[in-house]
Length: 440
Image 1 (spheres, helix red, strand yellow):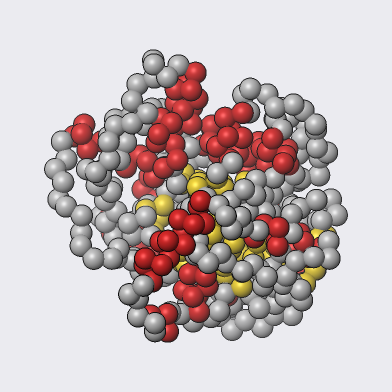
Image 2 (cartoon, rainbow, N blue to C red; image 1 turned 45 degrees about the vertical axis):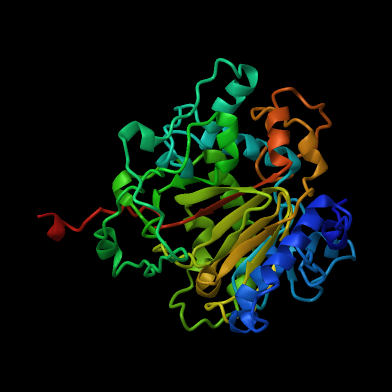
């Protein structure tokens, strides 16, 4: 049985971490203007609330579908069940966010563990780009496999060297002031080629990082690209790099999520002025995930409010899978002025963002909840070739913890992995980097 929201929010008032957070809170707010928060947008206020270490956030109003199904938890009445998946699990929508579909416990415990292995061992490595590649010369085997080798033979494993030291980059000094946010135009068929003409230089290697062991570097892993290459500096895709491989198991899992939804109950009666067509009627046949990202969170990490604008298919489903520790997910509207709905996402939960309103809605993850790793991460996954499907309908095997699984369990104790996949182009469409007229 899942822990209730109240249990997840339980805080040891005598803990050293809370005492430290209280001291920091007093220090940072002592001279702060009492009206400092009056200019916060509703979304920013929600981020601040759930991100705060002191006072601990109140989770009473957080939508917790797993607890609600057991007659507990908050958020009663905001979610509506529109049917069940092939294995009998409820499918929910939120009328306040047209196009948002919630699939609690969509992925079985066995498949969750297999996805964790895939994300760390198989995917976060060459040729898939990660956030670490800009600053470190990573081994081809990837940071995770280098970490395992370091655990086995710490004296023999070489340090991972920085790129700045290898190429002799001279520090230009960190820019002063707050980080500048990048505002990108929404991609579409009318501006695709002009967006592609925008220069997309590689990021400069950091001059403030140092050579380190794989195990020291592993907690700094934040993302690994899936499919089409995403350029973070411009928040646009760089199609000149070609499309990376989409793992067939992940593709099938996302397709099964989309095909499980009765879309007529999501959009059948909707009248959305900004949506010219009714392409939702064919998603079961036309949904073709071709890009995405694996996000690796440590428990103190956050993902601040943002909007996805880079896909030409601006309405087709974005499928998101949560693994590991639970998180608070915020989703609002087309501006930060819309108060967001807080949703508790547990390991194995699926979220689908679809349609013009939801795909352009501000969303983020202001909090990972510590010590919420499910018990099934203490067990080893069954072999991938034992016939287990990705639908989440297989039974749980009570195997003992194998030595090979122990490093994964240790990592996941303080981590959350989110896999999200989307469709950039209509099925069968192959983009040219530039139109013929511009190439001449």
